[in-house]
Every structure is written in C-alpha cells, then in structure tokens.
Image 1 (cartoon, helix red, strand yellow):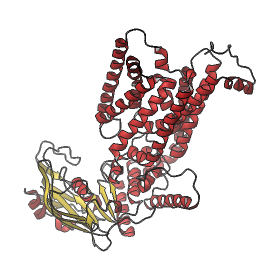
Image 2: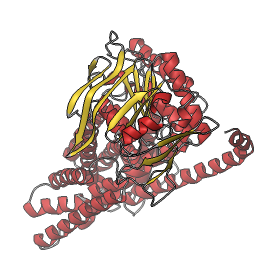
Image 3: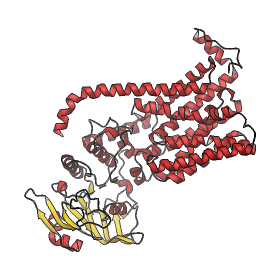
Image 4: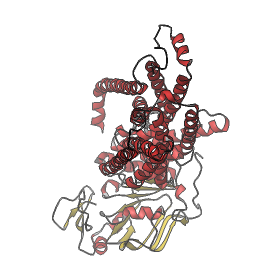
Amino acid sequence: MPSESASPTLSWNLARDLGEVLEYHFMVNALLAGSVVAVMAGLVGWLMVLRRQAFAGHTLSMMAFPGASGASLVGIPAAWGYFAFCGAGALAIGRLSGRGRGTSPEQGARIGAVQATALALGFLFVSLYGGVLGDLESLLFGNILAISDGQLLLLAAVAFAVLATLGALARPLLFASVDPDVAGARGVPVRLLSGGFLLLLAVAVAATSQITGPLLVFALLVAPPATAQLITVRPAVSLLLSVLLGLMIVWLGMGIAYFSVYPAGFFISAIAFAVYLLVRIAVGLRGRSASARGAADARPAEARA
Amino acid sequence: MAGMRAPGNAAVAQSIELERASVRLGAREIWGDVSMRMDRGEFVALLGGNGSGKSTLLKVVLGAIPLASGRVSVLGNPAGAANRAIGYLPQRRSFDESTRLRGSDIVRLGLDGDRWGFPPPVAWGRSAARQQAARARVAEVIEMVGAGAYAGRPIGQLSGGEQQRLLIAQALVRRPELLLLDEPLDSLDLPTQASVAALVQDVCRDAGVGVLLVAHDVNPLLPYIDRVVYLAGGHAVEGTVEQVITSETLTDLHGVPVEVLKASDGRLVVVGQPEAPAHHHDRHAHAAGDHTHAHAI
C-alpha cells in the first residue's frame, strides 16, 4: 500500500488526514466495500453467533480456498468459485448436520469433515493448476485495497439481497433459532429456515471473502456480534450495536493501515479481537461487583425458596 | 394480531375427544383403543410410565402424528386444524446459560414469532398501536405467571422454575383455548412443582383454558387437577383420581398385580408397577435390577 501513495504520514490534523485518504479512488472503494461488509457481517453474524454456528461459518469461509483455486484452474472469475463452493458447502453442512443447532459434538465432527474435504480439494486444485497460483496471499487475506468499481457493485447487490432475505425471514428465523420445538409446533418451517440461513451465511461469507480474505471473514462475522451480545440482551439494540461496532472496526483498521506499512486485514482483526476482549473483561468485572453486591440480599431469597 | 381469538369451534363442549384411537410408529403399536374426552376449561393430568405414549398423545392432538385407526377431534376440529388455539409446551426444554435473549423476548416470540418480517423499528399510526398492544399483552401474561421481577433478565441465567413460568406465559400469550404441557414439573424441586401446578390451575380457572398436563408423579398435582388420564400397557383409563388410581384399575391396565397405597399425608404410592421395556432410567425408580418396584406416581 505505501508503494501506491507517496508514503503517507499522519499529521495531527485529523480532517486533513481524512481528506488525504479520501483523495484516492482505491481508498474510497475500500472504505465503501468495508462498510458494506461490516453491515452485512454484523447482521448475519449476529444470528450465526446466537445459533452457535460459528464453526459452520468458519467452515464456509474455508470454502473460499477450493473456490478460488478451482476457479483459477478452470479459468473463471474467482468470485464465481467462491459462491459455488460456499453454496455447496452450506448444502453439505445442512444435509449432514440435520435437525437442531450446531452444538452437539457429533455435528461438530461432521462439519469438521466437510471442512477437511474442502481444504483437501483446494490443495488438489492448486497442484493440478501447476505453477504458482496468482497470488496466494490475496487469496487468503483478500485484497481490500484493490476493489474495482464492478466488484463494489456486485458486493452491494449481494449484500442488498442477503439483507432483504434476512429481513423477510427475521422473526421466524429468530424463533426457530432459540426455540425450535415451539416454533415448529406453531407452523414455522424450522428445517427449511435452518438450511436457508446456512445459504445466506454462505453467500455473505463468499462476498466478504473477496474483501477480507477467508481467514479474516471471521473477524467481522464473529467479533462484532459476540461483543454486542455481551453488552446487551435487547435484540434490537444488540443488532444495531453489532453493525456499529463492525463499521467502527473496519474504518479504524483501514485508517490505521493507510498510514502504516502493515496490511489492513491485520488491523481489522486485531481491533475486532481487542474490542471483544475489553468488553468481556468489563462485563466480567461488572458481573463480579454486581454479584458481590447481590450476595447479601440473595441469601434471604434462597431461604424463602 | 395481538389478542386475536384463535379459531376454535366454540359451539363444541369438548376440547379433546379421542374415540377408539390407536397409534403405530413403525411396526410398534404405541397404544390402541384409547377413548377420552376432555371438556373445555378442565384441568386434566396425563399420567403413565416412561414410554407409555404420553407425549405421543399430545402430538396426536397437535396433528403431528396421525392415528392408525379411530377418531380425534380437537376444539371441534380435526387434529392440527385448530393449532392456533393451542398453547404447547414441549418436554424438557431449557435454555442454554449463554442464550442472550430476555425472558420477555421468548414470550414475545410466542405471540408473533411465526410471522414473517420483523416489527418496524419506528412505528406510527396503526402500526404503533399494534406494537403497543403486543407489548401490553406480553406484559400482561408475564404478570399473570408472576414473572415480572425477572422477565428482563437473560433467559439462560434464570432458574428452572423461573424459565418454566416464562414458558407457560409464552404458551398463554395468544389466549389459547387449550394448553398442552409436556412434563412442566420435571426437574423442578418440590416447592416449585407445587407453585407451578397452582399457577396452572389459576390459569385454567381464570382464563377458562383447558389444560392437559403430562406428569410422572400425580402427587404434586393432587390438590389442583379435575381428572386424570392414565396410560399403561397400550391402553388408557380416565376418571377422577379416586376412580383411576386404585389397585383394581391399575392391575387391570397393567395386566400384573399392582397395589395402590395411601400415605397418611394423602400421597399415593403404587407398588408392583412394571416398568416399560427398554426404558430403565426412571428418576423415581430405586430398586435397580428388580423388575417391579414401589413407585410414587
């Protein structure tokens, strides 16, 4: 990145720094793409965390590796490979994991098997391709600073479709996620929603992979929602917070990356993790002081019960 | 939608009517030739050992399992047609400690969780009035089950009894005409069992809701229920506790000699009741390795 701009330096004038960042078309595209990803990942990831499907999400993000290498092998755009493999991965996980949420050890083992197969396929494609694959680094870590206008448009269209679908399914999906038995008795198509959500997750992951790379999708898909859910139990507030945290992490990460020699993906992931850690510690401290306060008046309540 | 009456046929006096009904799962007959009638507003306990088909009966009433023969009518409709008028609480449901939703959110999902879309974040006019009515209804049922003090806390951090009260509120939130509760007293301590049973009776009396409650042990329910249905040996007997829980009736039903003893405090103890095959993890059973044993039902 420093090679593309004449070694940017951080001044103490924030407005001037921001102006300098926004002068570059690639930076504007990067920020827009990052924002779209943050919003989509914040909302889809919120449900993923609530449904405890983080491992499924991780496996889907790994699908980008065989997706991209397979696409190079047959000579089609990498994006097509991402979508094809993520979609296939979602169907495989959906069929194998069956009813309920991704919590049982057996389900974990099945999803793990899907992941291992996908990675193995990726290596097979790389070796079949012979030679060196494009640039492996951008395959794994994305290339957020080289987003074309076309890619940005595709990303925005995908995000719109994903969020519109998610909005339409929102309430029954939430019901089926936390309370599948009663939701089923009320006529909510629990299995169909479970498969549908995996597909949505796959599309979101595939679109995000191109920006942050499959290894870092996870930072945006898991950390902001997990942090938001730690902070509040009110669903609407928690969703909003998840999106805002995602946006903040992306902007901050890219802003720092612009003035440094290290990649944006690192800063985005590091900030996401740091925020999660700080909130976790803060919530833990507050919980401990609250339980210390509550211990005195909790005892009579126990005696009453 | 909030507060809308669900479609039961109000002209019919029975909430549940089974006539010579039988159920097969695969090659196995779960029970056969079962007839029972439950009137509107009645509080009936559905008793029987493990594997006797109690939960199956609830699923038949919900229309989720078809009858192999016989007839079932629920609120004057075929089973499954009036599910909007039924509040169902499945067996052994508890929320993971880390579930980050409030108790009131779980109740709210019972009200409109099956509707597509999501409630508008900002609402005005009729939409705002609907949101207001929905929130008021949720608050009302939470108050009714006495869960007001903890409904705003994460559901996973509540005790079993507190969760059970909120789940009953969830089942009640749509003003059902019939409540199907599958072992709601399971895994609760004795005082909590009594208070939940009393709550269910209040709901039954005050809201005129018929309640069919599945239980292992009739004793915590004795002061509250109107009648019992007892499933055993693939058949059922219904009637009052005095009619059904007797040595003669249960001996007939089980096909082996069974003796009912009454303790001085009114508790009933059944001796010699055989366990259903292949289910030997009954929580009340102590005489391991024995084929028959004393059993408080």
